[in-house]
Image (tube, rainbow, N blue to C red; front, side, top):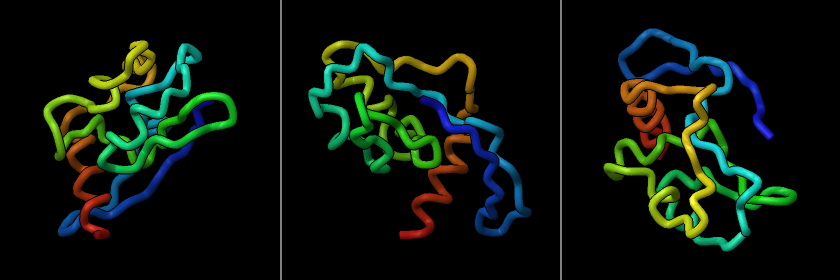
Length: 106
């Protein structure tokens, strides 16, 4: 399930801008076996147990930009069920902006 949302945010020293609708670039497919390997690897706590399979919170997922070179959930998934969502692409700059926003609240 993908939830569509538009989020108005203000980064430090910047004008407000809008993340595009459904701004998630990674998804967990129905091939998920609920092994619980991906959840603790996420530095943004973007992965949680859903009703049937694990889910990625699009507001928190940065594909590990700002933390690691590669998405850690993809690296550890034993069944390769976390592909890029080709319908919802984010640029590296958009992911970095989201990382800055998330970490500025810490």
